[in-house]
Length: 397
Ligand code: FAD
Image 1 (tube, rainbow, N blue to C red):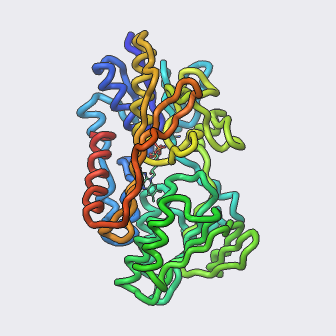
Image 2: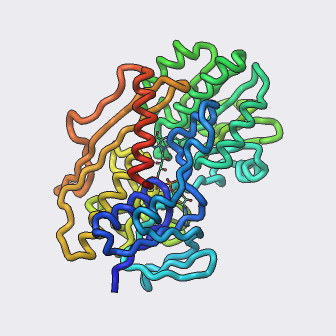
Image 3: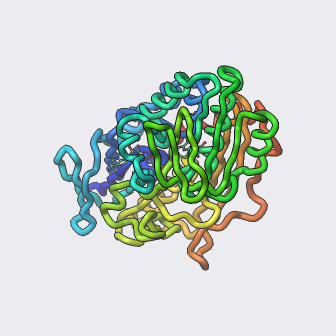
C-alpha cells in the first residue's frame, strides 16, 4: 500500500510541504491537505489592501493548483483532533483519516484573553486585528475609510516573538501613506510593547521622521492590558490610556489551537512547539512535523511566510527520506527575505540565510549572508511584488 502524508493547514508551511512531498516522492506518496478556507489568502501584501492600492482578490490564490497539477487531495474541513498514538486525524465534519506522517502548520492563535475586553470587542467587530488575512482585512480597511480626516489610527504590538516582526511597522507606514494623500490631518500611533522597533528599526524610523513627519508617532514600552471599545480606549500596564478612532490591537500569539490541543506546544511557557531542526519533526510526538509560525524559533529566525515555505521543503525532504529508507539531509538550509512597503510603492528589505549546525542542533545565520536595504526604493517595490507572485507559485501552483 502507498504511504500517506496528511497535512493540517494550507498556508505557507503546509501547502509547500504538501506540494513538495508529492514532487520529491515522484508522486508515489499520497498527500491529503486539510484546510477550512476555500482559497489561500496571503498575509504578505495584505497591508496594501489596508492602504487601498490592492484588493483582497489580489492576494488570494485557489487551491486547484495543488490538486490538479500535483494530485494533492484537498479536503475543505477543519482538523478537530489528532491521535498521535493511533496516528489519525479527526475532522470537524466527523471523518477520521489515518497517516504515516503528519504535518501540522496551523499558523498562530491570537491570545485575546491576554488583553481585557478584547475578545468581546473583536467578536462585535469593533476592534480588529487583521493578523490573518481575509474578511478582517477588508473590515479594517472599511474602518480606515470611514475615519474622519483628523482622526487617529493606533496599532498595538505585543512582545516578540510574534508573527512577522516588521509587519506592524509596514502596516503603520502604508496606512500613513494613505492618510497623507486622502486625509492629511490624521495620525498613526504605534504603541509597541517592545522597548524599540524590533525589525529594520533605523529604516522605518527615518521614513517616519522624514516622509511622515507629524503623521506617525512611535512609542516603545507600551504593553496593552485592556481595551474599552465603546470609548475607543486602550490601556497599558504603566503608561497613560490612549484614545483612537480606529484601534488595531494585536495581542500575544502562540502556536495554532490544534497544535496546542495536541500538546505539541512544549516550549516557551507552552506557547510554541519544539522541533528537531534537521527535519522539523516534533520533539513531543513521533511522525508529526510542525512548521511555520507555530514552532519555537532559533535566534534570528523570523516567523515569516518565506521561512515557513523553507520549513515546508526541509520537512518534505525529511519525510520522503524517512518513508523511502534514505538518509536525511545532514545540513539543511533556510532562506528568508522580508520586504516591507513604506507606502504603496517604495520598499525596504531584510534578508538572511540560515544553516543547520549539527554539533549544536540548531540553525545559525551564515556569516556575511543577507543584509538590509540602504533605504526605500520603487525598484524594491517591483522586487517585492515579484517575490510575492513567485512564492505563491512555488507554494500553490
Ligand atoms: P498560515 O500561512 O497562517 O497558514 C495556516 C493555515 O492553517 C491557515 O490557512 C488556516 O486556515 C489553517 N488551519 C489552522 N488551523 C487548522 C485546523 N485545525 N485544521 C485545518 N487547517 C487549519 N511573511 C513574509 O515572509 N513576508 C511578508 O512580507 C510578510 N508580511 C506579513 C504581513 C502581515 C500583515 C502579516 C500578518 C504577516 C506577514 N508575514 C510575512 C508572515 C506570514 O504571513 C506568516 O509567517 C506565514 O503565514 C506563516 O505560515 P504558516 O503556514 O505557519 O501559517
